[in-house]
Length: 181
View 1 (cartoon, rainbow, N blue to C red):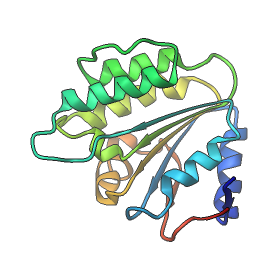
View 2: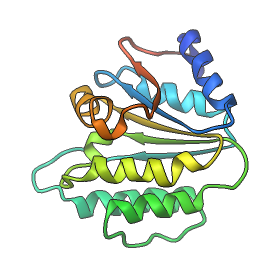
View 3: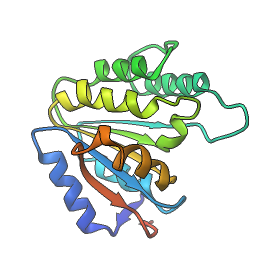
View 4: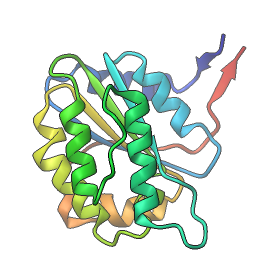
């Protein structure tokens, strides 16, 4: 069994977010393969419900429709919902929000968030609207925007006027998270 080691301060801060009655929007970014996703997965073990979505890696010809199909597949695997064709990100986020339980603490991880937005110039806008009108209205919800393309997160989330004042916590993960077997 793997045991998560390190990042006690960050884990304590994340526990504080989980203990809040209101919802929280979080960013976690840093270079690839250093444990960002693993850190959030570990922290999410303390939540009642955890949803995790990852964008498809960039490749020539990758489309928004393929990203939406991957999202729909991941949602169906993690919920009781059937896989549905999704026309846009607004619908995708609305479907996810409708499947969140009414009680308990929920963590939603959007991993490699910049990849999810491939082919959709308004992705950040859809995400902002989903936060404002869906996710932030559910108490005890932590939405994590995670990725290795820090410049995308900085440009589209942290420095985007649409997200000003919405981010509760951010973590720039700069070193490897270690696991003890």
